[in-house]
Length: 455
Ligand SMILES: *Cc1c(COP(=O)(O)O)cnc(C)c1O
Image 1 (cartoon, rainbow, N blue to C red):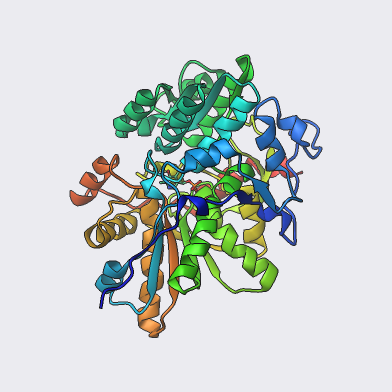
Image 2: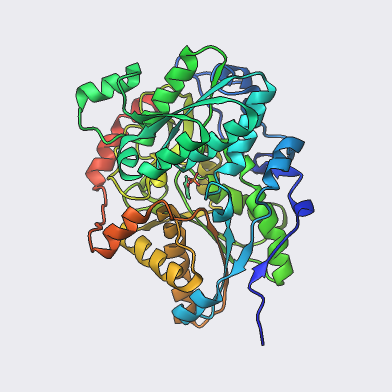
């Protein structure tokens, strides 16, 4: 008997509104604070950096649904709805009674989920008369997505790319340049923030935090220019909910409902995207789905971080955000999943974690590649090193099912493909991948610098 493997929706099924979980949260996220006055921020306070629509979405705790602009939805039609796939071959290889499903966000033109928010942010900027955008990129996925989105709406883009990725992933730089963006390795000498860091450490490999500081500095000092961020912030999580909203319909087509929803975790956008529409039923109807965020062992803010007010960037340009953090100037090891090297978790996620709606698991780098290889050899898609963390966490759950002899429904988000990351796979195949775990002292020492911000 042939088994249904793919659950496909049509263009008309693309959601018409994003889901804003803030409206439904029993405990609302604590306010963003101005580092100078310690007063809660209003949306207007964010207007110098962000476009107004996204600034308003950021602090919107009342509207459960936010309409997707027609032109953005029109752009989504190029690849959405994305497939939901039952991973029979992976199940078989694991000999598990679990039912494993994955939502395939790797089919977007740029190869990851990031385009869902990039198109929205670029459109709002265009709508407000912005001509230039700055941003940062870690692994290069966000920069690539925003480069393409800016091209669609006729906006100039300047990207600061984390230096280690600029060197390890030259093809992502080429992709951004192909779409027409200007790309600078970070830290650079073109900003005060970059100069400060290079003066202290000329060999600095860069981090998302430093690159964010550089991009914000350029946005503030350039006329008619806004800054866009591809993760962490509430409006980014909001835009990503198209993933989970589609998956909800597709799981219904499969006649199942997930017991566990799993995604990899950098700043939280793809996790939020797949999780929030399902978490809505936990909050409103008492469903008991478990939500698992797979973070790298090298950057363990969910499992070993502290809930504190901290900066979103290395140099302290952003407001103070109430978040799980291992300290804004934490320098994670140079793991291949560049998109997961970020010191904090988004504000909504942090509150939800505090309230017990989700939990983190730490994935060793070697386990992530091992899982990615098995996925490639069974399901055929070579996953992004970031996505490998979600697969590793899913495999752990599937193995638990086998030991307990219980069949659970597992749903994970395949946030992107790894076709531009083959150098990392080469290293793994050559046995040249290590695990990194920061010591407790290292994390504590780093968090000491955050403590005064909370006095
Ligand atoms: C950026 C990225 C991530 C991590 O970012 P989140 O905001 O946590 O989703 C994960 N996977 C891929 C493919 C990415 O490009």
